[in-house]
Length: 340
Image 1: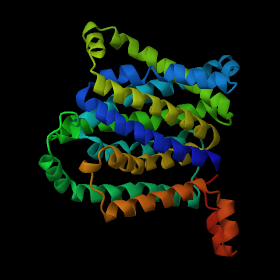
Image 2 (image 1 turned 60 degrees about the horizontal axis):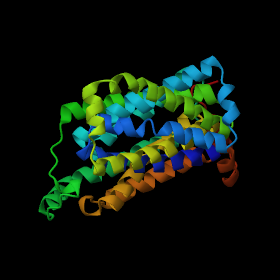
Image 3 (image 1 turned 30 degrees about the horizontal axis):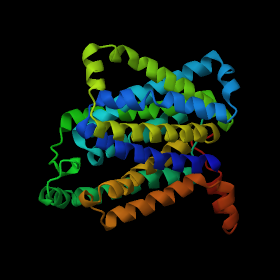
């Protein structure tokens, strides 16, 4: 149960990092964002690992665990994040988010196939709800998108606010990189779970050090390019500020996500992480209040997603104890897929 609540907290902090990264890539470049948000995770994870008493654990991982954690870092923090930044830069977060949510079915399918996990009736219901909720929410956002655009165009010009500039999506580029980011985000939880299954929280934090270090090393050849290095050091103060904020909250989110994956199955953690879409809209309203529209269908979508998250978080035995006992209910509760 703790793993589920940690996944929900990870979803919230991850959403905030997405909102701030969106502000960064409006005026900055993708590689500027990667050069700040990826390396910043290494010292933050290392400090937390030492403070939590997990410093010695860094030297206790097996070669297979280190390889698995490194693969998770490269796929998630380098490749998938690069593609995610490209898709958000081309489409904006509202259009890119639905495609990036394909990471959920990818994670679930691979976990069922490779890790021997299974779906229970409660988990299956939760998966359906957390997918259906964002769909409802995005439908409402698309329906009100035209009026939101008109409102943005009618707003007074303010060079310090990037949202006042009319945005023209680049669909082919955006959706291409959104699909690639979904694949990277979908694969990485399996590597983390394979390395940290049944580990305690300090060990999970120590594992994050290896993942972020591997992702940083993976970026070094690209940063060795003179043109990319010149671009990174030429970053302006405004996007740099948002990238730093995004990097800190992304690292915090990944710490919590690694803890969740150490305590709960991939099917549960990946499904609850879908609620980051809900939090993303809420945080966008706080940061861009004049340029976001929230209708009734968005509220309905949020409610459905929260119910789905609760279904994934609660233990099946606890829910059954609250219901009247019956033979058909017990028969449904014994359902597993795939059958063991």
